[in-house]
Amino acid sequence: MSQEHDKKGSQRAGHLQGLAGHPRPGLVARSNWPKPGEPARRALVMGLGVSGAAVSRLLVRLGFEVVVSERRKAADFGPEAAELDSLGVNIVDEERAYNILQARYGGPDLVVPSPGVPYDHVLLSLARESKIEVAGELEVAFRHQPLPVLAVTGSNGKTTVASLTGHILRAAGVPCFVGGNIGNPLSNLALDFQNDALGDRRLAVVEASSFQLETISRFKAKAAALLNLTPDHLDRHKDMDGYLAAKKRVFNLQGRNDVAVVNLDDPAVAGLGAPANVFGFSRAGRPALGAWASGGRIEVADGGLVLASKSWSDFSLAGGHNMDNVMAAAGLAWAAGVDPGAALEHAAGFRPSDHRLQLVGVFGGISFVDDSKGTNVGAVASALESFDRPVVLIAGGRDKDLDFAYLIPHVAKKVRRLVLMGECREKMRRALAGSAPVSMAVDMRQAVAAALREARAGDVVLLSPACASFDQFSDYRQRGETFALEAVVQAKALGLESDGPDGGRADESGDGHKNGDGNGDGNGNGKKNGNGNNGNKGPGDDGTPPVTGPEGAC
Image (cartoon, rainbow, N blue to C red; front, top):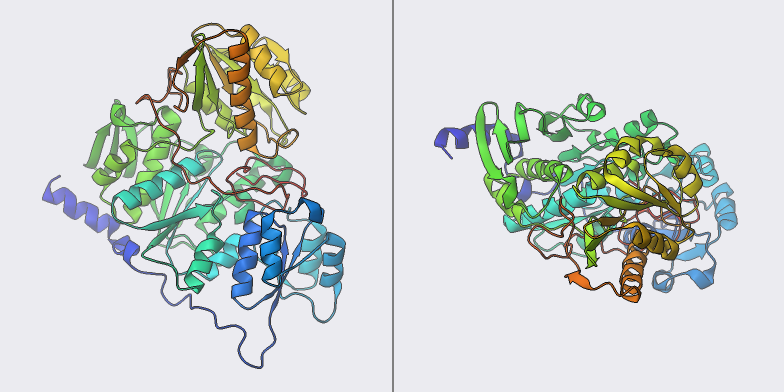
């Protein structure tokens, strides 16, 4: 790269140079609550899931008396309940929580709803009427940790981009936290800080769902990416305007010294008019500042100057949607001061997380691909476009009030046979009528059996549900694992020989990972415990079930 290029790139990134080396100034101090003679503050946390348990630990460390409301029976609590009990946290049912909120004296100062709790929940309505502060786990944690935040949101690709950004930063020598909706609540980082255990981490990469963004007020990202917007969670947000309004809150409080990473090919996203410096990414044309994919290459450019360029064939990831993911991650890394060339080089070897276009086996020439994380129509469309072989698509589950007709052109183009299962299989059958032949199934065993009857050597059997999982499963991970198990067991029972290694990832030809191997190295390793008031990924972040059992949000 020329000295002129170096100088120009440094000038444009100058407002963020040093970002990775300094905490947020003047915002955070370690807590010494409560001070002698002062009463402890009180908090009501709604939901004993991953995020609820994490923020409860943080609030105890901050000196709060904490009560957790939970709809599940005590017998269904996980080990976190015993841990919180040892910390003095009281776990109550929602009726008791309602009475606590009604108390004129001794009630909570703060209510923390987990992401799956809808805005109009009766307890939240009562809290607002009573002038009690309502702040989600993401907001509470942000206030009590010192690191600059790189935030990622969008309908699809959030986990990949957050994980990839963390991968790039670490490879570039920038220790960072990767978490949020990805399965590692931001409260864990805040608790580390309060316990003087921050280590050498200098940045926080945070995946943020629309549910989490609904309850922020002071949360501010130095760089924020909005990847795309396709219909999802309309049972929660009512319409696309409400969904977009929640998503664009990721740019709240940003100013001219911050960066907005924006998908210029998505009209809903490109026209937001973010107040920050815009790093655009596109597959249609070169942005003034940003990344674009053209001629089989990914380039990062500033005006007419190309700052970095790399052939797409060098990347382990595959598919146009992953071009977008790489460009977005490069933008966030650029905002943190990482050289664009180094960012693309580090991104080239990255492999995505499990249950996202993951090859689980090839039997009798039929590839079985697990895309259980594909819980909305946009994700399924992207998955289908990743294959140039006929697909037998297994879809269905718990409806999120989506318009499945969105999939008609993709199904008509790519799918040999639809196998529909779960609660909303009839709705999907009606919506997709005429786009492909249909087989109906009650559960995963029947669905895999139907797929095996219809698939031919060279085909792909793809699980990409376009629905939440909890009609039959505890989370998307269990659904994907059940699919993989049924594929192996039933294929062997039919005498179909294994033709390839397990554990790869489907590429555009459906033949596995470009490099022939690879399990995901994402950070989605959180534990879901089935409470609807939970919202962090790991096993389970795929939809919006009733308040008693959400798996998270997009």
